[in-house]
Image (cartoon, rainbow, N blue to C red):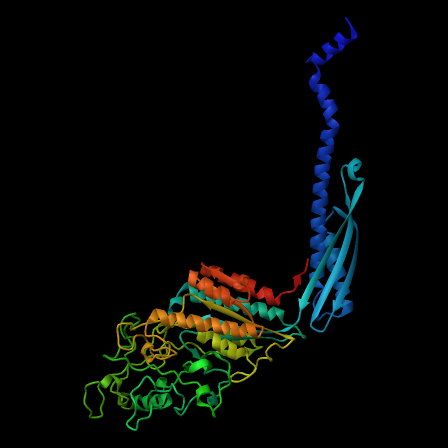
Length: 527
């Protein structure tokens, strides 16, 4: 047999081929397994070293720490964390600090050996290196929470809002330091805002009926003048002998451009003053406070006095007679219980809490928030008061100057529905009483409820633009109301589209508030 034939027979033979092939492939297989094992070991070790370095960097990056403590804290955290990872050895680290008046940047680089199983691939060990950095901005914080307290917030939503507000305030508490002033404010709103709380000053109020909108919802007096809301409150209190009929603290929106501005109230200029909110008695028999109060979209909801007055006058048309407030024949007023109230203070929420470093005060106020039915949702009015709280000028003066370089001003706005003018659409007044009076008064620019609500949308966006022009950060949240209209409005209102949050599940609201708080309060890794 020739040599060629022998070789041909060898290659065509099947006996022993598997063993031969395995012998040829085994080195490659072992190399692949070894490579995968050692790569996995290196990656795991790198993650361990990175997490150890990040923890040490965060722990030592607070502006309030002195330099000796900072270095000791960093070393202690790093060594303790590395010790928990047996795959790391011969760890080395460098740590540097860039500290300014209102910030601190820390940087660290760490390296370590990783023992390997297959030395023929990488050597007996592999040196790995990671880096980390952290920044703590220490600008003072002024945070105002503008929160919807309308009737649709009832049940799980208002509870979630109270819990979420506490969560955010707890985060603010953790952001405090000796070098950083952290203050917060609370603005609950329905159609109007209640300002009869801390720091209230009567000089903000039109006590004498000089404002162009004071009394426009009532007939003229015999002398041709308009009635003053504060006079009506006094008459009602004297006539009933019940102090609960006094002014609770809500105010109407100011007339014209002052309605959505932070211009300071000035007794010398009546149009800058705030008119006390006074919901007139609706026509019809007085509502029994023991019964369910009205909240109907079509008919009047706020009849709290008898239309029969004891003034000897003609009994026709008595529903608008001012005399019935001075000589009330029946006392059917309840403005203390929510969510449905009747009386001159209908749908007036709990008061504003202006900027304060006492976050316990804010927590207490937030726990007292409740829903209030009637009148509708007016986000522009809530935001306008949020702007006034942040403003350095009256009515509230606790805010730093606009654009102050050492202060971050923040608005967190929540609503659970679109802006709406509510109630009595089939009646002559065309709505419930609101912070702009009745729809029939013309202050919305239309007697159509839908058109009026879109006007409130425009005012809302105008206030957002004013705030952003002053470098205020705005975060907007819609709760179970991520409609196309709301998405557009509050997406534009927010400082950045990523600052708009649509929340469907109320139980998730505290998590969202915490996420928002982290954006401007928590020490953050930079890489």
